[in-house]
Length: 356
Image: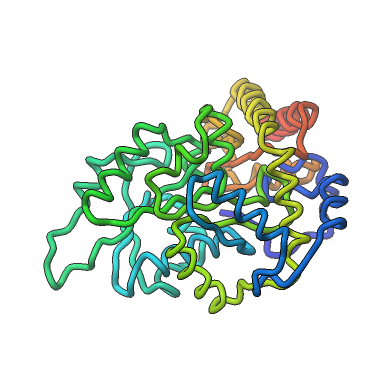
């Protein structure tokens, strides 16, 4: 299973259509211009005007009191776990969530917490499933202190948590005395797809963050939001983990540009994902999951190819995709892939399957 290359293979042809991930986006000329014009200061001392402006906007966007600028989304997740939990605590999250399988075992390594994986379709679970996972409160059981969700779900196919289901799960968690955290890496994809504001999705979250390096097209950065008290504690962990920065306004300028110019256009990525799924559905041997946002997953089992074999074949033709299982392939649309790129991807994948 291949999710990310360790190092580039120089023998391969150039990537012409990059559906590997929306993290592959590169800043546009206009975004780079905004970065070059940024007024900067010492972010660690609170003196960078761009970072301050970005945090203020993100707090307002998510309906929270405060925010902190961090280098990566994984750091947002892990700082949140470090603030919300104590060593030995148990976190309830979907079994396919990013904190379970894609953050290097950080919950255990850093927070000393255990993640109990819950089952459910499309990377989601309901309050009944969550309640069934509750342990009897006794001295030899781990305290269950946090419920974490993803919006959109990554391994769940880029699915959007319906607002009613999300509110029910998070509201139930609060009533049970637990804190709530949202991995909002693609929160704006969910907002655009569902026509629901980020603040509405986040209203029952004690912490929530947005990644700017995916569909929003910035080169680096994520913003973690929560109460003033939560962000104060998050800042200490930011210091401990080496996340404090200096003239970070250059990076914040890219994020501010993304908020101004790259949110509404996420609908184009969703449309391209739908077109890609429709095209792949016509390829014999592929079972395609219907996308809700910009992630398209398909199964290669009936084609006789493993996911890795298919990925290697299409890479020879200049198409890059990722694999997340023996037979499961992920293709991710983003601002650097247009309709022509999607059509080319369908033809390349169809050719690779025919060659089998």
